[in-house]
Image (cartoon, rainbow, N blue to C red; front, side, top):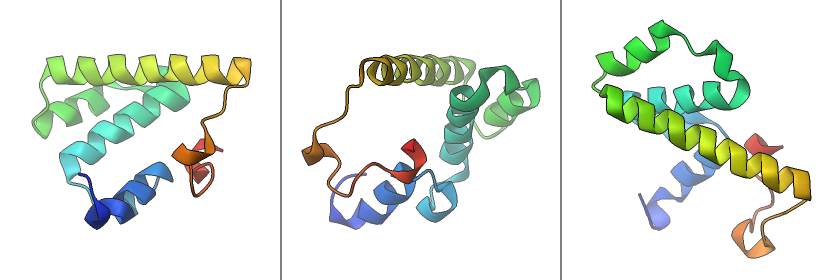
Length: 100
């Protein structure tokens, strides 16, 4: 999803508003799964994983999503540790509310 027609979706996702993003249920559940990993990975449940399977995600795709979420969390924590901020050109509207 690229281009001006998707700016609203991109902005909603940057702000952590999955409802406003209007994305399909399978992708929404996968993003919620990544959000659970980000906030408190120990809260991932068997039911949440089964819900992902029920909407069509394979175990391999679920595992990859978990790896990607964990890896990006590592990058963010390292950047926070060293005070690394993205250049302003990447965050024209300022830091997204979901990142605050």
